[in-house]
Length: 94
Image (cartoon, rainbow, N blue to C red; front, top):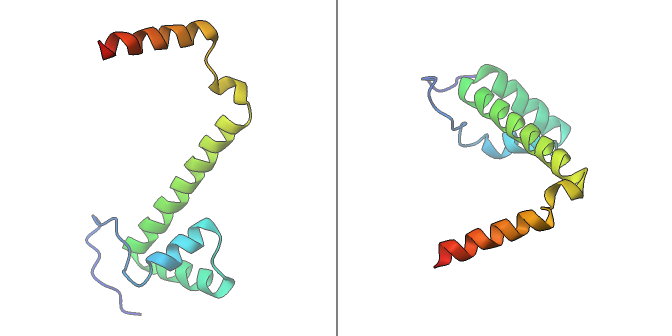
């Protein structure tokens, strides 16, 4: 395979690979597509960085979802905190 020159500073993958890499990262790619995308990314610095970044982002988002969805009470402010927030809003709107 003949790949483009990698300057090391691009965050963009090869144009024809972006969809395959996204589907590979989120787990929706069929096995053959996943194999091809991972093989390409292993040899192409731009696509390898892109795949790693997308996988890291998906992991972070899943981590955030797990933190916020496990205890809905954590996301609620107490009554006195709401009064403080509302008073601040009224003050800002003046």
